[in-house]
Length: 248
Image (cartoon, rainbow, N blue to C red; front, side, top):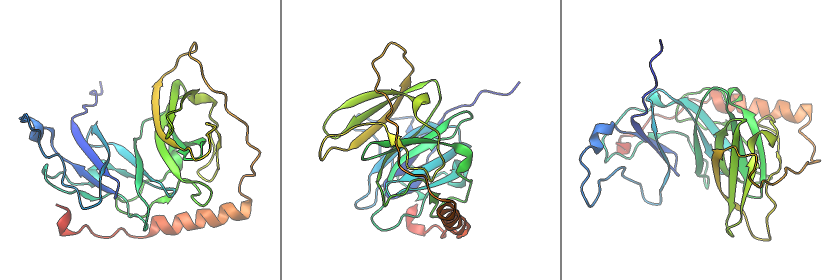
């Protein structure tokens, strides 16, 4: 019988695209004043932290529509005071907005700042080496990515806006599209408002939910798809830069 997975590896990813894994035992004796969990570079901030199994596949997604999928074991463990190593190479002005732990049966839900959303199959995010530029997750020329989350068909989804509006959706009503799809309207926003938070919760048939609006926006043409796929191939094939010593 296969042993149950043990979720005992603290895993952190920063907005500047660094990942740090530290053995759980290093957090055994926490003082009243707390312990240093990660050393942050100037201007950086913690974007995501979870307990993982030590061999999970992660998808790191950025605000400007890039994403990279790799095995967390590619990032060597280090002490609590380490900065981490590069998870994804960011373009100037970009930042990490979410990290997903891949699991069988789930889909990658991407929601934009202007309230568009779509699900995509996990397998369309090819596995590459940690530290590369990644591949396209969303066309950032149309909208910026607010958040990503792996969801199941039996989940509900909560969205919260900058102005404090919260809505609930059934995940299975959000269409599955390719990574090149622009999605559908999942949240209608007021002027100057934008999506800030995406959360996954248990399905509830009795809860009040918003309906998904159909979208008539055209999908990319065959020629456009070929161009985007070629760009992805080139990006994925580019060798990641070596980690620098100051990331320890």
